[in-house]
Length: 366
Ligand code: ADP
Ligand code: MG
Image (cartoon, rainbow, N blue to C red; front, side):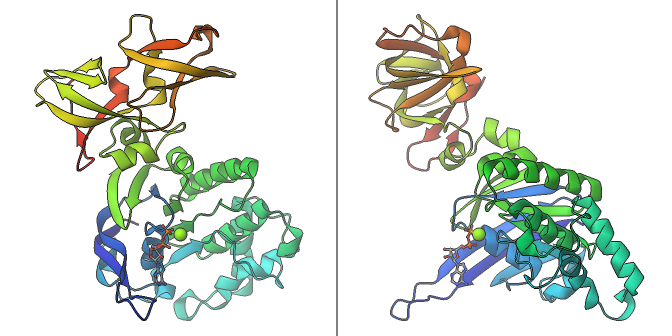
């Protein structure tokens, strides 16, 4: 089911009686979620992800704009009629019901032509339980399950109605690191098997990058960039997106363009064609540094951290906006411990220029 958001906006009235300041939680979203795909809605806390999800689900009414499921305008349609399955961070299971009863629950209120017989309900709930691999836990209560198992029950409960759309709001945030990884693989598998159009909300860029067909990066209610995870990583539209994606994060420098060269202090790190002289913000991905004794960028070495396959070099440079620069290089090429200066050349595909004022990307010819 394709989902189309048209100029979708949500404004909350002020909570504080003294001030009239309203909160624009979601500002003019306008994009299409393709049928059968998993999209990651990504951004820092408070940027409007949940509000967007709740408007798609029908739990919240937009202040402006429209939502279409395929060609159906569902903007005014109540949540129950939309055919959405919703999963929350805290699982929200009924504690006094067994796993089986929890999963059956949404089927028991179906009316009219959707009404099912007891056998049909049981079959559906076992099918959903099998899909998330909890069919051997059907008689337990939620308190007798691990966090990961509880979240699977919540997913089964969302799937049992065979929704047209699956909406997941930070579903992995309450799980420990290992379970998070495993459950995220499970969600990806289930989505591929069922081909249900899925919106996955998270503030964790790695999570979104790893399972999404497409990511939508938001900031303060406004979409910053939409694209395949790798494309957005390789070609961020602005400084915010560049900084939000990637671990370790991108290194940011104050720099300038002068006579066809990009400078960090007095070091000319890149040639550029056709750009006017100007001050710029420079972003360099950690994997964009090459240790090179003839390289142009001079930094002072602070530490060398060996992490198995890679070496992380921590260095400093006065023009760096972050306290330290982090570069990742092959373990075989690590610098001598007693050296104090390091020189780098920079991979062209890993360096980005941004406008000093607007922080928008300045495109550079190859
Ligand atoms: P996210 O899920 O990305 O963390 P939310 O969508 O929950 O962000 O919130 C977006 C903004 O809207 C925040 O500034 C939040 O405080 C505000 N907000 C969310 N829900 C309400 C509400 N019911 N009333 C007033 N403000 C709200
Ligand atoms: Mg949220």
